[in-house]
Image 1 (cartoon, rainbow, N blue to C red):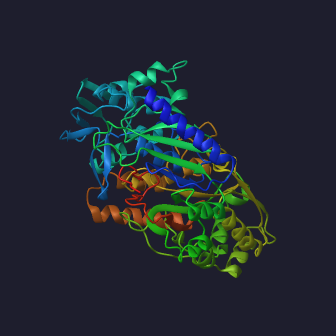
Image 2: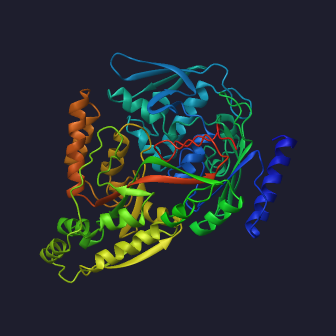
Image 3: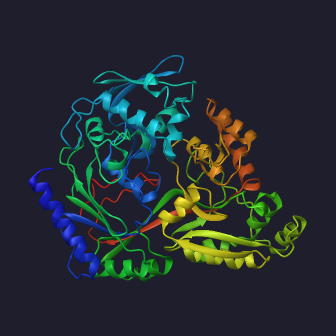
Amino acid sequence: MGLKSVLRMTTAVVMLSFASMAPSYADTPPDTLVMATSIDGVTSFDPAEVFEFVGGEISNNVYLRLLVRNEADFSEVIGGAAESWEISEDGLTYTFTMRDGLTFASGAPVTAQDAAFSLQRVVKLGKSPAFILTQFGWTPENVEQNVTAQDDRTLVLRISEAFAPTLVLNALSSGVGSMVEKAVALSHEKDGDLGYDWLRSNSAGAGAFVLRAWQPNEAIVLEANESFYLGKPKLNRVIYRHVPEATAQRLMLERGDVDMARSLGAEQIDSLASNSDVKVEIDEKATVLYIGLNEKKPELQNPKVQEAIRLLVDYDGIGGTMLRHQYRVHQSVLAKGGFAALEELPYKQDLEKAKALLAEAGYPDGFNLELDVFAGAPYRDIGEALQANFAQAGIKVSVVASDRRQVLTKYRARNHQAVLMVWSPDYGDPHSTMDFFLSNPDNSDAGTAKTAAWRNSWFDPELKELADKAIHESDTEKRKAIYADIQRSLQTDSPFVVMFQQTEPVAMRSNVENWVSGPAFDTYVFRGITK
């Protein structure tokens, strides 16, 4: 790191430290975007591990992936670190040509050896998102034979089955397809961890920005990568300030202490309507909000109890009033607007039918239930609304509100009873979502595929077989029909209660332009933002 970079980083950290101690009243620096949001869910910046929202959007700006989603049409996958590719006739071998002249932020060239290393380390480390790559038959034992660099510019991938090419290419455009500089990662290796411990809080990528600082529950600083292959970002710096309270975010935005407020509630959004210094953009997202019912709890194994819980939710009341601007009613795992999404809404609140089902299941007086939720808005409020809904049938809910990191850790260890959780697909193909909700190869506590199915101690082999059939189906209409069948089954016979789909409101100062959100949790693009 050069002296100039050190000075810039120091300036930013000093500013953050000052800002964290007391409210400021100065405008933000003209070359810096400052966002107020909640960053309490961040656990790691290693692209082999990142699997939560803020970490995902940062990863997309710090790392360049082998393939990327087209910012003009996010349904399309185009070249990223690889500029072209060929697929063998049998569909088992993919040969990529790396982009000529591409460099990491360090200035070192991005080679096929770096690409092979990056994909291999995801499989070898076996963190939560690894299943996106291991579905291609790669294991820690065989990945070096199946993911190889023939020379500096030629990467060859051999997969176990002839999957639909769109699935393979979309998967490689997800976060696990990020290019990590091999030499830097290995220079920080400890006990064979492939640089994992260091990369959890540092970056070694070829993206538009470099991770310069992370102070948990305080701030994150990104600095522009001047050598980014699509050109230097318009702003020199992006700063996340941890401000979990929506009211505080709104006040800071109106004073000009921050340029953006990312998690305002309906009341805050409405109150900004008359302020000409501020504007609100609302983006359609593929994120769905669901309740996960852990079948380790005996009551939650019963299909009649699961059905009763679906009938207790006041979808219109919560979605239409409390969550206006932020979520709308949606009851399928595939979000509206995406390929094969089911838009049917079979459930409305029906208290009498829910009570009857609970009585038939042997729980006429209900039971006690813990519901884990994120502490920030609007999730605690949703939890309390569900608490009131469920109480009408005797289910006594204890709402356990914790920071995102704690909720995610508990969920990923499947130590919850019920959890209010969000899901956003990792890549553009519907199999991303289907695999997450259906795949569970080992339902023991030792299972390593920490999908939603595993986390909720559930597995339906027939639905999984249907999902596997879909990824080999080349007829688009037949594939849609398979996914429709799966979604209907998940709606009525699974531990997942999908309730809402996100519409993300972002409030910003009126001079902020070119905010790009994209449909997924990790499709944010910061390099074109101006102010």
